[in-house]
Amino acid sequence: MGCAACYNRLKTANHHITRDSETRKQVAAVLGADYDGKTQVLHLLEILARDVGMTKIAAQVKHPLRGLKVVPYYGCLLARPPEVTKFDDPENPTLMDKVLQAAGATVVTWPHKTECCGAGYSITDASVVRRLTREILVMAKAVGADCIATACPLCQLNLDLRQKDTEKEAGEHFGLPVFYFTQLLGLAFGIPRKKLGLRSLVVSPSKLLADRGIPA
Image (cartoon, rainbow, N blue to C red; front, side, top):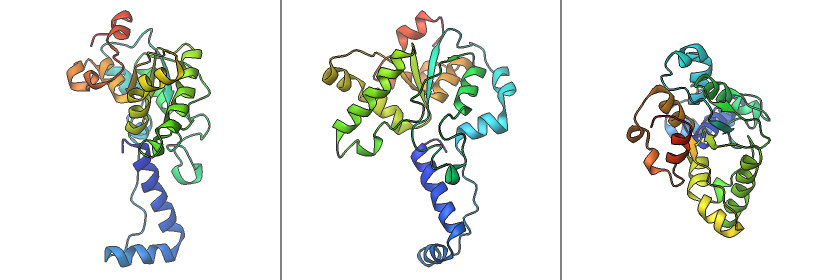
């Protein structure tokens, strides 16, 4: 699973079905078959960090992300509620931190790892999105980050696509590239930029990567 929202919804469905017999009956009636809620739901970060492991990830690195200061942004749905997702520490998750460190990046500590970016309001009220994303971008700049790494495409979309609108509204400049974490891993593994979709990013990472000597 690569989307935090999808991950959270599927984990929540399993949680309710395994704990509520009436819900399980209702689902069976709709599906025409019984489902026990025991299908394992994993996010890609869990697979990489726990199953693949840091040693194997580091062994694949051809171009370490040395000098690249990254803030890992998990968003509000991966680790919460903890009794449902059982992903990591709900306030200070570290799975992405470890994966990025294995790729050679400098992971910067910051307090907005699990703040909400407002993705649920992307269509209904963009002003909420701009306000919440601004808070995240301001904090990322304040701690000296070069870029943001996300573990959810909706979060990436908000922080990247909405960044220029946020800058215009707030009269500020952030200029922070926002990567999906696998794009950074791909760079470290030597995968060409074209295959990583970096040209599709609204905030171009080209100058940053060139300044850090990271081939792209």
